Length: 386
Ligand code: PSV
Ligand code: MN
Ligand code: MN
Image (cartoon, rainbow, N blue to C red; front, side):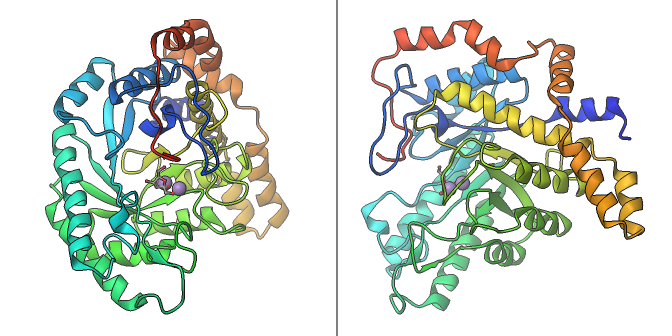
């Protein structure tokens, strides 16, 4: 059996990054339901993120999305975060919400539009310099809706050219994380639709270019843990955008739709030695109808529970069964870990770290929700559905 002290130490050291946009109002293209007390500024998003970290102890960084979190002074925003025990995490670029990008951003047939998009990506690296962020997260909505609309080959050339320019601009301690998504908003051909496309570009660029796996960005039935295992083996897994999906890119709370899948993913992370700082464990979610801060706390806990179960897999028993060709025995080892109730173990880890054993109860008792509802009027939208 795995050594319990080692399991606890790994859980205490785990880091999960929360996204600034999860704290703001969001919705679908049909309706954004405004909630009372949501943040009006990036600083207020950090105030809320500080509560998540205070109660969970494992969420010390916050990802920004530019321009949703545009401020005049990013170094001052980083200082504000530090005063609250936080750091600023990945900088997410946004080249998908401008009229100019109707036919694409970095893959647009018009060189002037491509220049504009690249300018934004380079500006994001300037922001990273000011915030001290390590990772630039790149997601491109680029693609086409109709066969023949544009040249698929040429679009890859344009993408490669832009990525190379961004790569050149990265500092020694900075990385770019390239995200893929199989469709939406493009419905015929997306320019970075899958891990293979992202991997091919990252491989050509070099070690500072890594693939990011958004768990909501695959076709139904895709074996995501296989992708994770493969990318880890190739040292090309840079991070995760965690969320869960029932249908498409639903951005629901991670672990809500399929906790078993999350466990299988975290098992491959543990198996592949990926549970350290090299992999960024980020949430990318929107809480359209549920209360935001508790939803983010719940999501962090769901990742912790999947990780705890993954750490409890008896690696020796599993290997022995695998090598003996014991199909049912090997499967039983994995299922035993998945079926373990790890909540008492995590409560213990939290108590040992000086935290309340139940972060949800601690948040409810803190009075923060009542405070923000009374104090904040006119919260901002997350960016989605705007
Ligand atoms: C796109 O669907 C995506 O997953 C990218 O990460 C965006 O930047 C993010 O959503 C914003 O929520
Ligand atoms: Mn994402
Ligand atoms: Mn997405």
